[in-house]
Image 1 (tube, rainbow, N blue to C red):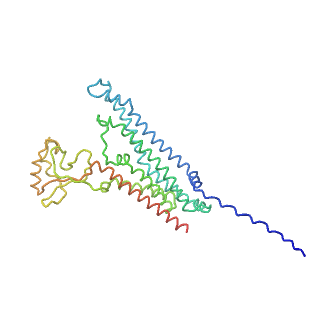
Image 2: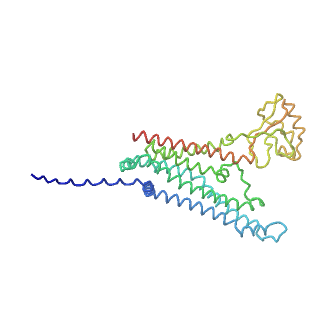
Image 3: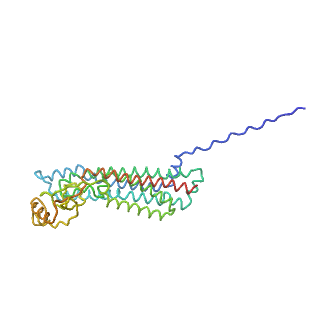
Length: 362
């Protein structure tokens, strides 16, 4: 008896699992939010165009006009009017470019909160993505990475162009009465001439993503994101002086404008007062200012009677006056400390976003 053995058909090898390419997810996010990206590009191009235009108005023609208007040279027949026209155009364009820099974090934060995550959570698009072999953590990473890169590149370009345009007007600003030299601690100069706008934008992206995950409502996330960013910006503008130890100066000299603010040009005055006999620094209402009136119109000045001021001060029971201030070289320490705080908040928001997502998808 012969038995024929039929060989079993070979089992086909399992098809390899499709590679999970992170770049594909990035392309999906980019395609989903392409209109927001194009609007951001248009915003940056508009701000860059305004700043380049401002820089162009202070080019060779403006420098030639400025040279022609210097005393002792062949004066231009319309020096005041011509310089005023040039400066007005430059100043308007520079202010519009500055507004583009200052408003960028709020716009980015509003979009990140409303569109990047909240809308997808509200419409269920995120749940659909998680069922298409896209791990939630990878989905969130793509949501954070792409906007962060785009926002950083755009705001960095605007900052670089603002510094270029601002420096172009220094010649006119310093040799004419047009445009007082800006105070370095002012919100406009401090933000646009430093680096804090970059971490502020990154913080706006991170906080916006977190709000979208928590609230899951587009309008609620948008409004909350704008309010939080505005509150933080105002808080820093008001309390920035506390980010770095201030310096103190004692005494009053005749060439100072007033003992109330006995600081030099470029120094940021913070507080002032008097020193008691025991050495304690206290507030002071400066009743003795009348004793130092130099020109009869305002206290202090080169003709101030400093001895009369100190005689009056001692009669009130004080020995000296003091003032606290930030010198100009505190600009970068204040910049770095504030930038570190923005980045720390951004890192915390990213950490909490992953925690929230993990609990929601467990």
